[in-house]
Image 1 (tube, rainbow, N blue to C red):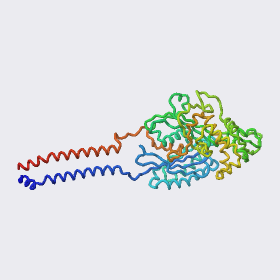
Image 2: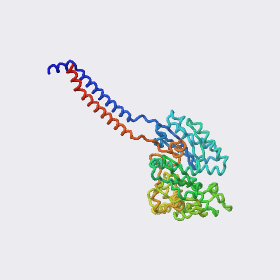
Image 3: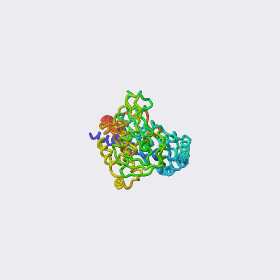
Image 4: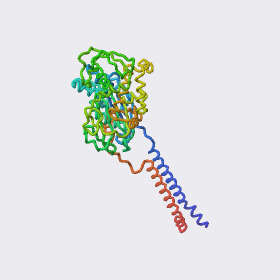
Length: 495
């Protein structure tokens, strides 16, 4: 017994080895855990940018978008970083001085240079999409339209960004890109579940777009768009009504009432007490007004408000032509439209008008009642209630509210039941609802046709499994060392 104790004291190597192996094992585990923690540590985020100019009929807006640089074509969420509204009217209004169209953009483009980091300037794509205002100008005078676009292009090429072009987008594109925007921002495309229809109202045109099934879409192929996004197929019905934007619809309605050529027009779509002198040329100069100016008339007329919502809607209905429907069903003007399906997001002028009138959450019946009360309110009271609003815009809200009512019900066939499916929206997840984001996503291929591959395990699950396996290996190692201890002792005793 004494001899064995003596030999252990003379051969203490096994104690040092066990200690060393234990220390190394613990060190390895700590290193493993540290690596996992560092792997999950958030990195300094790098971003990429894109700029889209929405050249509408009444104004131009510059949108700056931002997204994580390392996730451009995967799961990175594009969001709106900044918007700059160009002072002055839309570029189509510069037909008499085309060179000023481009100059009007300089202030907002300088602002964009500050919001996009300098190191990203040269790689940031810059697009301009012109909508219904320029469509009308191209119908009226293609040469002037080209001059306006040339002026815009000259200024945009002088910026430090990667200019990708300025063009007039079609009404079908405008509707489809608006649909992409609101469904992308609402994360409905990745889910592959039900989508939201898009209702857009500008100054010169209006668009309706919604997903539908294949059945019945063969009736009108020109109103059909197909997409494959994130591995899901979408068949969209979309149509754009040129000349039925809010501003052009007002001109069409007023022109019908002024056709008799009287020196004054009593208009039920303006509040009682409203009175202003208008030139006939300001009403009949638009390509949207098919009927010419009355022959027997003076240079101007007095526009007088009457303030009657029901009569206003009757006047508005007359601008929706009824040539007959050659399809199974139509919206208006003989245009095919399948049955309304799913929820809808109504944005642009739909939102701004209904929000001003506090009608974004009312039923159809409640909306009609409020419009009756608003239109019957005397003009002097309306001005007192809204002292900060320019009179030109304030005067048009009775018409605009009634036009939206008539467009959605008489035009697009929304009923008391389906009215509740409409949500009037300005922003989704911090980004404006509209066509511009969908336009950029499409041109930069930011939405893959197929869903990206994903690893078999989520990152957290992978780390947990790695730790568990490491722990098992360590335990096995300890048992192995322990099983060698008796052998080592026995061999020492024999020696």
